[in-house]
Image 1: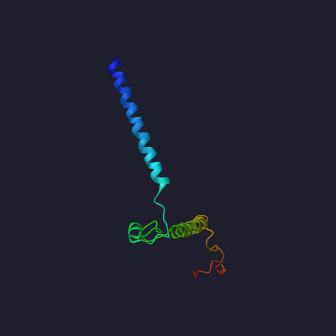
Image 2: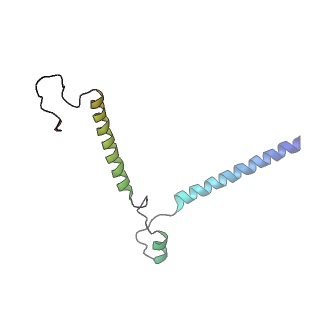
Image 3: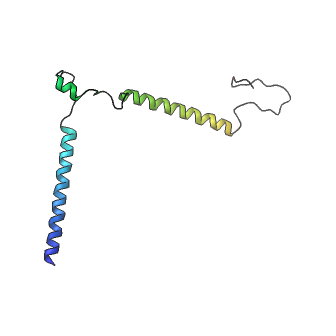
Length: 108
């Protein structure tokens, strides 16, 4: 019995140390280096950092933020247009016998 509990304790201790070491290595890698240096113009540095300002294949972070802002704006405008159609407020009532000028600028 004591052999099994000692073996399981040493295994869990070994796993805990390995997890801590992996976490420490990841933190050191994340915070330690790989920073872009615009002053370094050597061939090896440029070869290793061909497109440092791009987050995707063709977009910088500011391009991604602009696309998200445009998408959010369009989504909200479409929501309000959908809400107007839901409540039948997108065009004048057809109940009047007289022609009513369209307020949305779209021909009937």
